[in-house]
Image (cartoon, rainbow, N blue to C red):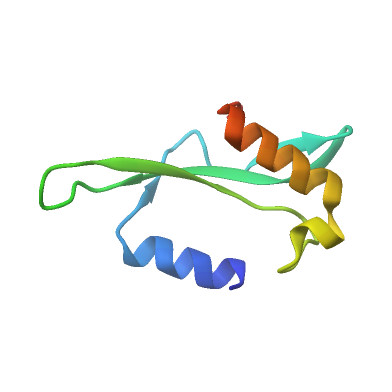
Length: 86
């Protein structure tokens, strides 16, 4: 779905962004590839809290690897390595 749909879902589950980690650019090849925003999720019924990071990629559409292969690979590698810098 679109970013607007994703944002609607985020607000629906009650997530709130972390003040200093909103729309921070991430870079590939000295160019802004997209933005990162960190969210906190309220505690569930069993008391478990959570958080997640929303990553966007400029101009990617639904087929990120087809339209932005370098950015897609970089995003996947950073995610798997736990190396997002916010």
